[in-house]
Amino acid sequence: MTTVARVRDAWTDAVDPGRRIGHTLEFVPVIDSTNDRARELLGQPRGEGTVVVADLQRAGRGRHGRSWQSPSGRNLTMSVGLRPRLTAGRAWLLSAASALAVLDAARPHARLSVKWPNDLVAADGRKVAGILVETSMDGERLRDAVIGIGVNVNWRRDEMPDELAAGATSLADQARHEVHRVELLASLLAHLDAGLAAAETGDSPLERYRRECVTIGHDVTVQAPDGPIDGRAVAIDDLGGLVVETAIGPVTVTSGDVVRVLGASS
Ligand code: BTN
Image (cartoon, rainbow, N blue to C red):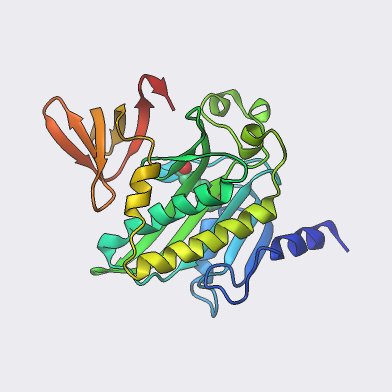
């Protein structure tokens, strides 16, 4: 048996044929971006819910046009294409449900929190995982979505480039032991599947998201599309927007990144 075949067999342990998310899994050793492959699969029979896992992405991307770096075979880089039964206005629930699924799957190894909108951070504020949800709309309805998740699993801070090590960590760093990537994925897919089903039936993850969101109550700088916003993060509104109390009153930010919390850059 070749190395690639053995790796593929192992990832298949995360599959559950009866489940919508992860009924099938496609492992690729190297790819540009798993999000692109998951979107391609949406055009194929049974492509919805097929999980794409790569050991290495040549052009992994993050939110707001950033790149996503991850060394070969150490972490979890996965995507899944879906046709969620959600209105465009509720598309944000995909992002919240994904963040909570990562948090739950990581729980045996590390107590993570959500940093608005959907970064997963360790207790020291360092980033463990990121989520990129790419959607297409059909009027008021969400036509489809690709959820891409990158988790730093066994990539130790002392192996990371300096510019990442300052603000990033991994499950293995937190747990002080190697973490089994396939078991992590299996748990993540089960939680994501349940979270999506709940969101579609009107059972919103918002209350739990609010409880897990570490951003609230802190003085922040949010890098928004129109420029930075400084103030105290006071709430998450019903559409997932971050409400920031600024010098000129409350501002709701629907897109952006929290780049500073209490003076600590991240
Ligand atoms: C972010 O924090 O900005 C989001 C990072 C998302 C990275 C994942 S890795 C798997 C999937 N494929 C990509 O190209 N990006 C996402």
